[in-house]
Length: 398
Image (tube, rainbow, N blue to C red; front, top):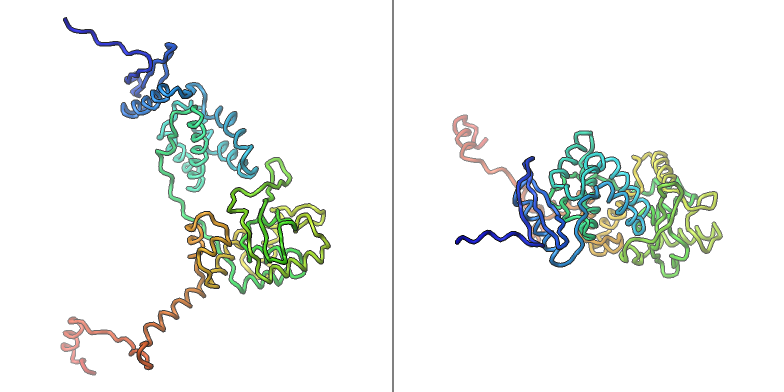
Protein backbone atom coordinates (compact mmCIF):
# COMPACT_ATOMS: atom_id res chain seq x y z
CA UNK A 1 0.00 0.00 0.00
CA UNK A 2 1.46 3.34 -1.07
CA UNK A 3 1.89 5.87 1.76
CA UNK A 4 0.08 9.14 1.28
CA UNK A 5 2.33 12.23 1.15
CA UNK A 6 2.54 13.97 4.50
CA UNK A 7 0.77 17.31 4.69
CA UNK A 8 2.96 20.23 5.70
CA UNK A 9 2.56 21.14 9.33
CA UNK A 10 2.87 24.43 11.13
CA UNK A 11 6.14 26.36 10.78
CA UNK A 12 6.83 24.66 7.45
CA UNK A 13 6.83 26.39 4.09
CA UNK A 14 5.94 25.84 0.46
CA UNK A 15 6.89 27.61 -2.76
CA UNK A 16 4.59 27.97 -5.75
CA UNK A 17 4.10 30.09 -8.85
CA UNK A 18 1.22 32.56 -8.99
CA UNK A 19 -0.97 33.09 -12.06
CA UNK A 20 0.77 36.42 -12.72
CA UNK A 21 4.11 34.58 -13.10
CA UNK A 22 5.65 35.67 -9.81
CA UNK A 23 6.76 33.12 -7.24
CA UNK A 24 5.47 33.01 -3.68
CA UNK A 25 6.65 31.34 -0.52
CA UNK A 26 4.03 30.55 2.13
CA UNK A 27 4.61 29.69 5.78
CA UNK A 28 1.81 28.35 7.98
CA UNK A 29 2.06 29.67 11.54
CA UNK A 30 1.00 27.95 14.77
CA UNK A 31 -2.24 29.97 14.85
CA UNK A 32 -3.19 28.71 11.40
CA UNK A 33 -2.47 32.01 9.63
CA UNK A 34 -0.13 32.13 6.67
CA UNK A 35 2.71 34.51 5.89
CA UNK A 36 3.87 35.04 2.32
CA UNK A 37 7.08 36.07 0.58
CA UNK A 38 7.41 36.95 -3.08
CA UNK A 39 10.08 36.94 -5.77
CA UNK A 40 10.60 37.09 -9.52
CA UNK A 41 12.19 33.63 -9.41
CA UNK A 42 11.60 30.47 -7.41
CA UNK A 43 15.00 30.78 -5.76
CA UNK A 44 14.34 34.35 -4.65
CA UNK A 45 10.98 33.45 -3.10
CA UNK A 46 12.53 30.39 -1.42
CA UNK A 47 15.39 32.44 0.04
CA UNK A 48 12.97 34.92 1.54
CA UNK A 49 10.84 32.11 2.89
CA UNK A 50 13.90 30.56 4.54
CA UNK A 51 14.57 33.84 6.35
CA UNK A 52 10.93 33.94 7.45
CA UNK A 53 11.06 30.35 8.71
CA UNK A 54 14.21 31.12 10.69
CA UNK A 55 12.46 34.04 12.40
CA UNK A 56 9.49 31.82 13.25
CA UNK A 57 11.68 29.13 14.81
CA UNK A 58 13.66 31.73 16.77
CA UNK A 59 10.38 33.32 17.90
CA UNK A 60 11.41 36.69 16.46
CA UNK A 61 8.86 39.29 15.32
CA UNK A 62 7.54 38.72 11.82
CA UNK A 63 7.35 41.38 9.12
CA UNK A 64 4.15 43.32 8.62
CA UNK A 65 2.58 42.25 5.31
CA UNK A 66 0.37 45.32 5.02
CA UNK A 67 2.54 48.32 5.90
CA UNK A 68 3.68 50.37 2.92
CA UNK A 69 7.06 52.02 2.48
CA UNK A 70 5.38 55.42 2.81
CA UNK A 71 3.78 54.46 6.13
CA UNK A 72 6.98 53.04 7.55
CA UNK A 73 9.17 55.97 6.51
CA UNK A 74 6.83 58.79 7.54
CA UNK A 75 5.21 57.25 10.61
CA UNK A 76 8.05 55.19 12.08
CA UNK A 77 11.50 55.82 10.63
CA UNK A 78 11.65 59.63 10.33
CA UNK A 79 10.15 60.26 13.82
CA UNK A 80 12.77 57.86 15.21
CA UNK A 81 15.83 59.39 13.54
CA UNK A 82 14.70 62.91 14.44
CA UNK A 83 15.72 62.17 18.03
CA UNK A 84 19.33 61.31 17.17
CA UNK A 85 20.30 63.14 13.96
CA UNK A 86 21.09 66.76 13.24
CA UNK A 87 18.12 68.81 11.97
CA UNK A 88 19.99 69.43 8.72
CA UNK A 89 20.34 65.67 8.15
CA UNK A 90 16.68 64.98 8.93
CA UNK A 91 15.65 67.72 6.51
CA UNK A 92 17.87 66.20 3.82
CA UNK A 93 16.42 62.71 4.39
CA UNK A 94 12.83 64.02 4.34
CA UNK A 95 13.29 66.06 1.18
CA UNK A 96 15.03 63.19 -0.61
CA UNK A 97 12.28 60.77 0.33
CA UNK A 98 9.51 63.16 -0.77
CA UNK A 99 11.19 64.09 -4.07
CA UNK A 100 12.95 60.93 -5.22
CA UNK A 101 11.69 57.87 -3.34
CA UNK A 102 7.98 58.22 -2.55
CA UNK A 103 6.83 58.92 -6.15
CA UNK A 104 8.27 55.59 -7.34
CA UNK A 105 8.04 53.09 -4.47
CA UNK A 106 6.07 54.80 -1.69
CA UNK A 107 2.83 52.92 -2.37
CA UNK A 108 4.47 49.49 -2.37
CA UNK A 109 4.15 47.29 0.68
CA UNK A 110 7.49 46.55 2.34
CA UNK A 111 6.92 42.86 1.67
CA UNK A 112 6.57 43.58 -2.07
CA UNK A 113 9.76 45.60 -2.51
CA UNK A 114 12.29 43.90 -4.79
CA UNK A 115 15.78 44.90 -5.96
CA UNK A 116 14.44 45.74 -9.40
CA UNK A 117 12.10 48.31 -7.81
CA UNK A 118 15.15 50.11 -6.38
CA UNK A 119 16.91 50.01 -9.76
CA UNK A 120 13.74 51.28 -11.44
CA UNK A 121 13.60 54.14 -8.91
CA UNK A 122 17.15 55.23 -9.81
CA UNK A 123 16.40 54.92 -13.54
CA UNK A 124 13.32 57.13 -13.14
CA UNK A 125 15.32 59.75 -11.22
CA UNK A 126 17.83 59.82 -14.08
CA UNK A 127 15.06 60.01 -16.70
CA UNK A 128 13.59 63.01 -14.85
CA UNK A 129 16.92 64.82 -15.13
CA UNK A 130 18.34 63.84 -11.75
CA UNK A 131 22.09 63.53 -11.27
CA UNK A 132 24.05 60.40 -10.39
CA UNK A 133 24.55 61.88 -6.92
CA UNK A 134 20.78 62.20 -6.44
CA UNK A 135 20.29 58.58 -7.53
CA UNK A 136 22.99 57.36 -5.17
CA UNK A 137 21.69 59.43 -2.26
CA UNK A 138 18.11 58.26 -2.76
CA UNK A 139 19.35 54.66 -2.72
CA UNK A 140 21.30 55.36 0.48
CA UNK A 141 18.35 56.99 2.27
CA UNK A 142 16.03 54.10 1.35
CA UNK A 143 18.70 51.64 2.45
CA UNK A 144 19.09 53.34 5.85
CA UNK A 145 15.32 53.17 6.38
CA UNK A 146 15.19 49.49 5.39
CA UNK A 147 18.06 48.67 7.72
CA UNK A 148 15.89 49.78 10.64
CA UNK A 149 12.86 47.96 9.19
CA UNK A 150 14.87 44.75 9.06
CA UNK A 151 16.24 45.29 12.57
CA UNK A 152 12.72 45.78 13.92
CA UNK A 153 11.40 42.76 12.02
CA UNK A 154 9.13 44.91 9.86
CA UNK A 155 10.93 43.76 6.68
CA UNK A 156 12.42 40.37 5.84
CA UNK A 157 15.59 41.81 4.32
CA UNK A 158 17.15 45.02 3.03
CA UNK A 159 16.83 44.64 -0.74
CA UNK A 160 18.82 47.83 -1.39
CA UNK A 161 22.01 45.87 -0.64
CA UNK A 162 21.42 43.83 -3.80
CA UNK A 163 21.50 46.95 -6.03
CA UNK A 164 24.78 48.60 -7.02
CA UNK A 165 24.94 52.39 -6.61
CA UNK A 166 25.68 54.52 -9.68
CA UNK A 167 29.19 55.84 -10.14
CA UNK A 168 29.51 59.42 -8.97
CA UNK A 169 32.45 61.53 -10.05
CA UNK A 170 33.86 63.37 -7.01
CA UNK A 171 33.18 67.10 -7.04
CA UNK A 172 36.39 69.04 -7.32
CA UNK A 173 36.95 71.62 -4.58
CA UNK A 174 39.55 74.24 -5.50
CA UNK A 175 41.60 75.17 -2.42
CA UNK A 176 43.22 78.56 -1.98
CA UNK A 177 46.90 79.14 -2.54
CA UNK A 178 48.89 80.94 0.15
CA UNK A 179 48.81 84.09 -1.98
CA UNK A 180 45.02 83.87 -2.36
CA UNK A 181 44.63 83.32 1.38
CA UNK A 182 46.62 86.48 2.08
CA UNK A 183 44.53 88.43 -0.44
CA UNK A 184 41.29 87.24 1.18
CA UNK A 185 42.47 88.20 4.68
CA UNK A 186 43.64 91.56 3.34
CA UNK A 187 40.19 92.66 2.14
CA UNK A 188 38.53 91.80 5.49
CA UNK A 189 41.30 93.16 7.72
CA UNK A 190 39.91 94.78 10.87
CA UNK A 191 36.66 92.76 10.70
CA UNK A 192 35.90 89.74 12.88
CA UNK A 193 35.56 87.73 9.67
CA UNK A 194 39.32 88.04 9.19
CA UNK A 195 39.72 86.03 12.40
CA UNK A 196 36.95 83.66 11.26
CA UNK A 197 38.57 82.91 7.88
CA UNK A 198 42.08 82.69 9.36
CA UNK A 199 40.89 80.18 11.95
CA UNK A 200 39.07 78.20 9.24
CA UNK A 201 42.22 77.91 7.10
CA UNK A 202 44.57 77.18 10.01
CA UNK A 203 42.48 74.52 11.74
CA UNK A 204 40.23 73.02 9.04
CA UNK A 205 37.14 73.51 11.21
CA UNK A 206 33.84 73.05 9.38
CA UNK A 207 31.44 75.97 8.99
CA UNK A 208 28.99 74.76 11.64
CA UNK A 209 31.85 74.08 14.06
CA UNK A 210 33.23 77.61 13.68
CA UNK A 211 29.77 79.06 14.21
CA UNK A 212 29.35 76.98 17.38
CA UNK A 213 32.74 77.85 18.86
CA UNK A 214 32.49 79.18 22.45
CA UNK A 215 35.16 81.03 24.42
CA UNK A 216 35.00 78.22 26.98
CA UNK A 217 36.20 75.86 24.23
CA UNK A 218 39.45 77.83 23.75
CA UNK A 219 42.61 77.81 25.86
CA UNK A 220 44.82 80.57 24.47
CA UNK A 221 47.59 79.93 27.01
CA UNK A 222 47.89 76.35 25.72
CA UNK A 223 47.13 77.46 22.13
CA UNK A 224 44.37 74.89 21.61
CA UNK A 225 40.63 74.51 21.26
CA UNK A 226 38.05 71.72 21.51
CA UNK A 227 35.10 71.42 19.13
CA UNK A 228 31.99 70.57 21.16
CA UNK A 229 29.05 71.74 19.04
CA UNK A 230 27.82 72.87 15.64
CA UNK A 231 25.33 75.58 14.75
CA UNK A 232 22.94 74.64 11.96
CA UNK A 233 19.69 75.94 10.51
CA UNK A 234 16.48 74.16 11.51
CA UNK A 235 13.94 73.00 8.95
CA UNK A 236 11.33 75.41 10.29
CA UNK A 237 13.76 78.34 10.41
CA UNK A 238 16.07 79.63 13.09
CA UNK A 239 19.42 78.32 14.24
CA UNK A 240 20.11 75.44 16.62
CA UNK A 241 23.28 74.26 18.34
CA UNK A 242 23.91 70.54 18.72
CA UNK A 243 26.83 68.48 19.96
CA UNK A 244 29.31 67.09 17.45
CA UNK A 245 28.70 63.57 16.11
CA UNK A 246 31.66 61.49 17.22
CA UNK A 247 34.40 61.46 19.88
CA UNK A 248 36.93 62.07 17.09
CA UNK A 249 35.13 65.28 16.16
CA UNK A 250 35.57 66.51 19.73
CA UNK A 251 39.34 65.99 19.81
CA UNK A 252 41.61 68.87 20.82
CA UNK A 253 42.86 71.04 17.96
CA UNK A 254 46.21 72.82 18.24
CA UNK A 255 46.39 76.47 17.20
CA UNK A 256 49.29 78.09 15.34
CA UNK A 257 50.62 81.23 16.98
CA UNK A 258 49.08 83.53 14.35
CA UNK A 259 45.59 82.12 15.04
CA UNK A 260 46.01 82.28 18.83
CA UNK A 261 47.19 85.90 18.60
CA UNK A 262 44.25 86.81 16.34
CA UNK A 263 41.77 85.25 18.79
CA UNK A 264 43.40 87.02 21.71
CA UNK A 265 43.06 90.38 19.94
CA UNK A 266 39.45 89.56 18.94
CA UNK A 267 38.55 88.81 22.57
CA UNK A 268 40.18 92.08 23.71
CA UNK A 269 38.31 94.07 21.04
CA UNK A 270 34.92 92.53 21.86
CA UNK A 271 35.47 92.47 25.65
CA UNK A 272 33.73 89.09 25.82
CA UNK A 273 35.13 86.28 27.95
CA UNK A 274 32.27 83.80 27.47
CA UNK A 275 29.59 82.88 24.95
CA UNK A 276 29.97 82.42 21.22
CA UNK A 277 33.23 83.65 19.73
CA UNK A 278 31.60 85.04 16.59
CA UNK A 279 28.33 86.98 16.89
CA UNK A 280 26.17 89.08 14.58
CA UNK A 281 25.45 92.76 15.25
CA UNK A 282 22.23 91.60 16.95
CA UNK A 283 24.23 89.47 19.41
CA UNK A 284 23.19 86.13 17.91
CA UNK A 285 25.31 83.35 16.33
CA UNK A 286 26.29 84.06 12.75
CA UNK A 287 23.90 82.69 10.15
CA UNK A 288 25.62 80.14 7.84
CA UNK A 289 23.90 81.64 4.79
CA UNK A 290 25.22 85.10 5.66
CA UNK A 291 28.74 83.70 6.07
CA UNK A 292 28.56 82.09 2.61
CA UNK A 293 27.40 85.37 1.06
CA UNK A 294 30.09 87.33 2.89
CA UNK A 295 32.81 84.91 1.72
CA UNK A 296 31.70 85.11 -1.91
CA UNK A 297 31.66 88.91 -1.77
CA UNK A 298 35.05 89.07 -0.03
CA UNK A 299 36.63 86.75 -2.59
CA UNK A 300 35.22 88.81 -5.44
CA UNK A 301 36.61 91.99 -3.86
CA UNK A 302 40.00 90.25 -3.57
CA UNK A 303 39.90 89.36 -7.27
CA UNK A 304 39.51 85.64 -6.53
CA UNK A 305 37.15 83.00 -7.87
CA UNK A 306 34.27 82.79 -5.34
CA UNK A 307 34.28 79.55 -3.35
CA UNK A 308 32.27 77.95 -0.57
CA UNK A 309 33.43 77.81 3.09
CA UNK A 310 34.29 74.15 2.53
CA UNK A 311 37.11 75.28 0.24
CA UNK A 312 38.77 76.84 3.29
CA UNK A 313 38.90 73.41 4.94
CA UNK A 314 40.46 71.93 1.79
CA UNK A 315 42.94 74.80 1.86
CA UNK A 316 44.05 73.65 5.32
CA UNK A 317 44.95 70.26 3.85
CA UNK A 318 46.89 71.93 1.01
CA UNK A 319 48.82 74.15 3.43
CA UNK A 320 49.65 71.15 5.63
CA UNK A 321 50.86 69.28 2.58
CA UNK A 322 53.01 72.22 1.49
CA UNK A 323 54.52 72.29 4.98
CA UNK A 324 55.37 68.57 4.53
CA UNK A 325 53.17 67.52 7.45
CA UNK A 326 52.79 63.69 7.47
CA UNK A 327 49.31 62.41 6.47
CA UNK A 328 48.71 60.84 9.91
CA UNK A 329 49.27 64.20 11.59
CA UNK A 330 47.06 65.92 9.00
CA UNK A 331 44.36 63.34 9.78
CA UNK A 332 44.47 64.40 13.45
CA UNK A 333 44.31 68.09 12.55
CA UNK A 334 41.38 67.63 10.14
CA UNK A 335 39.75 65.06 12.48
CA UNK A 336 39.04 62.58 9.70
CA UNK A 337 37.77 59.24 10.98
CA UNK A 338 39.55 57.40 8.17
CA UNK A 339 43.04 58.04 6.81
CA UNK A 340 41.72 57.38 3.29
CA UNK A 341 39.65 60.55 3.53
CA UNK A 342 42.76 62.50 4.43
CA UNK A 343 44.76 60.98 1.59
CA UNK A 344 41.96 61.76 -0.85
CA UNK A 345 42.16 65.45 0.06
CA UNK A 346 45.92 65.43 0.63
CA UNK A 347 46.75 64.27 -2.89
CA UNK A 348 45.09 67.37 -4.33
CA UNK A 349 48.55 68.82 -4.97
CA UNK A 350 48.68 72.31 -6.44
CA UNK A 351 50.91 73.34 -9.34
CA UNK A 352 53.64 74.79 -7.14
CA UNK A 353 54.04 71.48 -5.29
CA UNK A 354 54.10 69.63 -8.60
CA UNK A 355 56.86 71.96 -9.89
CA UNK A 356 58.85 71.34 -6.72
CA UNK A 357 58.54 67.59 -7.31
CA UNK A 358 59.62 67.97 -10.95
CA UNK A 359 62.64 70.04 -9.89
CA UNK A 360 63.64 67.11 -7.71
CA UNK A 361 63.43 64.76 -10.69
CA UNK A 362 65.38 67.21 -12.82
CA UNK A 363 68.17 67.25 -10.23
CA UNK A 364 68.13 63.46 -10.05
CA UNK A 365 68.61 62.97 -13.79
CA UNK A 366 71.08 65.78 -14.46
CA UNK A 367 73.53 65.24 -11.57
CA UNK A 368 75.60 62.15 -10.73
CA UNK A 369 75.93 61.88 -6.90
CA UNK A 370 79.49 60.50 -7.31
CA UNK A 371 80.63 63.11 -9.80
CA UNK A 372 80.58 66.89 -9.56
CA UNK A 373 79.98 67.12 -13.29
CA UNK A 374 76.36 66.89 -14.47
CA UNK A 375 75.34 63.86 -16.44
CA UNK A 376 75.47 64.34 -20.24
CA UNK A 377 72.23 65.41 -21.81
CA UNK A 378 70.47 62.33 -23.22
CA UNK A 379 70.49 62.11 -27.03
CA UNK A 380 68.30 60.10 -29.33
CA UNK A 381 69.68 56.69 -30.35
CA UNK A 382 69.06 56.15 -34.09
CA UNK A 383 66.93 53.16 -34.94
CA UNK A 384 67.61 50.74 -37.80
CA UNK A 385 65.05 52.62 -39.90
CA UNK A 386 66.84 55.92 -39.19
CA UNK A 387 70.21 54.44 -40.25
CA UNK A 388 68.80 53.02 -43.49
CA UNK A 389 67.17 56.35 -44.32
CA UNK A 390 70.44 58.19 -43.63
CA UNK A 391 72.42 55.82 -45.85
CA UNK A 392 69.89 56.23 -48.66
CA UNK A 393 69.94 60.04 -48.54
CA UNK A 394 73.68 60.33 -47.80
CA UNK A 395 73.10 62.47 -44.71
CA UNK A 396 74.69 60.19 -42.07
CA UNK A 397 77.57 61.84 -40.28
CA UNK A 398 76.59 65.40 -41.40
